Amino acid sequence: MTTHSQLHKPLLVLLISLMGAALLSVVLFSPRAHAKLTIEITGGVEGAQPIAVVPFGDVDGARPSVDVASVIAADLARSGRFAPMSRREMLVTPHRQEEIDFREWQLLSVNSLLVGEVVKNPVGGYMLRYQLFDAFSGKQLLSNSVPSTEKGLRHAAHRIADAVYEQLTGEPGMFATRIAYVTASGRGPKSRVALRVSDADGFNPQTIVDSADPIMAPAWSPDGRKLAYVSFENRKSAIYIQELASGRRERVASYDGINGSPAFSPDGSRLAMTLSKGGNPDVYVLDLGTRQLVQVTDHYAIDTEPAFSPDGSQLLFTSNRGGKPQIYRVSAAGGPAQRVTFEGDYNAAASYAPDGRSLVMVTRDGGGFRIVLTDERGGKRRYLSNGNLDESPGFAPNGSMIIYATQNNGRGVLAAKPIGGGASQRLSQDSGEVREPAWSPLLR
Amino acid sequence: MFQGLRSSRLLLAVVLALAIVTGCATPQSQPTDTAPSAADLDAMTPSSGSEISTKPLEVEPLSPLDDPSSPLYRKVVYFDYDTAEIQPQYLDLLRVHANYLYRTPGTAVTLQGHTDERGTRGYNLALSDSRAGAVKRFMTAEGVPADKLTTLGYGEERPADPGHNQQSWALNRRVELVY
Image (tube, rainbow over all chains, first blue to last red; front, top):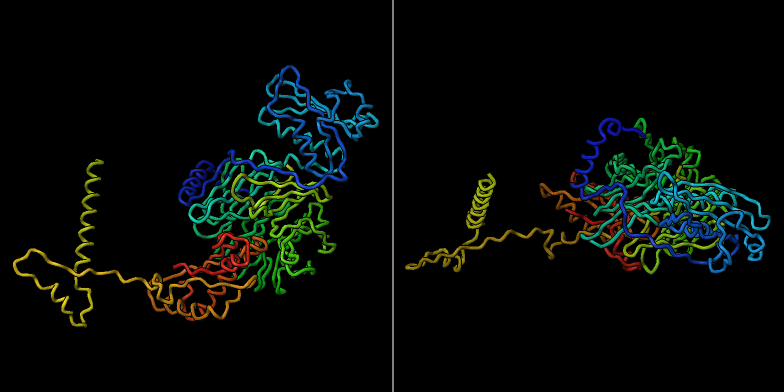
């Protein structure tokens, strides 16, 4: 997406958006630290591969501020695929291949062994050297060095976890990614709503928009550099696209009625959305290059919550044209819609897995709203959550986990869960509500 | 410079205050088609030998929108779960408002639609818009010019009651008429 303002007068645009922000009681931020998300692991770890992530050695007094091995082990544990061995059970802590006696690790029944060390980098910062072994054969599976700044240590650790995950599962890792979410605190005139972005493990949360009015529906651009969202500043809804690094943003839809549910196409060239400017909510697609707006659905019922297929040709959406909300599929260029879901009397907010072979959505089961996984045709339902008010489900960019919003003791929290089974994680803030999570794409 | 600005502001404030006081004291706008009461006469007659004079207090008439005894005081209609259909018991209330808007120049209203927290936020945003739209269609059919009616769907983002139970949900499924 390019706009003439971004190309020609970035400073002016920044000033204007800052002035606008002050007037509208919305504050935009370049990334800035904020209240931390706390992660709790809930549930068991059956079926997970045992792995030993040995504490990294500290060469020449490098003394990094981050325990790199513990970040890697926590990542692997959260995936549900690995059961990292407790450090207390480790009898020795080798840092290099020549220090390893594989018989010791075979006795402890670990499948894999990760060792490494942190070395001062002569040009500043650190080098993280690591080696991954098959504990039974002693075969080296990975050997690499990752440079890192002091501030980038957690990120470097996530990248090592990604490499280990990919080596051992054959699928890309998603630990060096981010999540966007909405937080809310206070009520009435004191209420504040913020759009935040944190690392995928909840660390390093930063506020990118703060407002007295509702903010909804964050959606990542496929390059991970922008977020589209709905803001109700100025007493009406509008869709904005904000560049994360600069805090600059652009209003792309502010028609009469609602402007909601933005979703980027997989190539980032289009933005699907819900508009009710025609008298009732319908799905539209905006070409971000030409600014051409195409109406995709045209029905007197509600059509909303569009989500692109991985190839960008189709859209899933929620419609109550049959009386109750169900999932439908339509060509992204418009045309007749096909109903996808038939089971249950409430199916909504569907999205595709990255490989396009399964869908995740909200369904009503009895009185409760739960997250359900289906095949791409809406069949073979499998419940992934058991809350009463679960919503906003989405896949991790490698398709291995889902993240969604749920309630814990009446308070909004996030939950992440491996699709293949295993421990769930709950992400909550010290105070206030957390909701509407959106997992970033893989970040290059 | 600043001093001058401040004193001219002060002057302006004094002039405004005087205008308000004299405005309030002017009895010309009082309805005159009723005979003054004895008490009125008493008050208006300068008492001989005294410097004291009394004046009637003019009270700004309470807007019927803010008057608890007016049918216009109620400004919320409630909905059943997952529907934008206006319940029959609210039609009279909406007719009263439609009549007021139709008859009163310079009035306009924003119809703010809301849902309870159940179901997805995106669908609820659309549902709240449909609720506001249903009220707008009814009021236009009652003769209110469309340019006096604005709709705004808030979805489940602005609950009237923060609870997570049937009672709270019933209070949250609503359209508010905000003048």
